[in-house]
Length: 151
Ligand code: ADP
Ligand code: MG
Image (cartoon, rainbow, N blue to C red; front, side, top):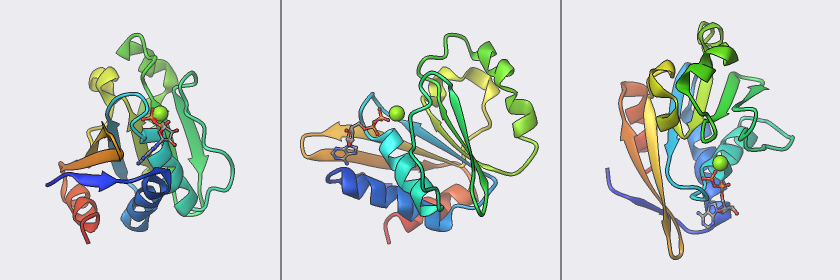
């Protein structure tokens, strides 16, 4: 699938909201790309569209932030500071995975084999006039969502 250009923070939030329209649990979204390429901003747009009204902070130090939303449970992870994938054991992911939820995971490459496999990976990048996004779908649900981004 070809690259999508996202010009500005408002557009990044809107793209997150687009994802929220069709995302149903269980769903696992990986957000990949350098520091500052808009992973948390996109997550903020997604959470707001799902009805979350408070702040959306990057779980850089807590690693995981749970959100009990009207329609779904959502877990936002940022694994940038995870020293060892075994630390994930202490977060109790195994128990959390037993109930259908939406998982949004920044820096999944730091998580080793302990993470649930993705339905959709979004590869984000810096561009002089905004950000780039390339979807890589790995399940039918992921593909449906990726296609919706081009509509
Ligand atoms: P990450 O979580 O990938 O480290 P953030 O979401 O924290 O990145 O975003 C870093 C900065 O980039 C923020 O100041 C945000 O407003 C800005 N930003 C996000 N998306 C865009 C975009 N599409 N165009 C321009 N700036 C953006
Ligand atoms: Mg972030």
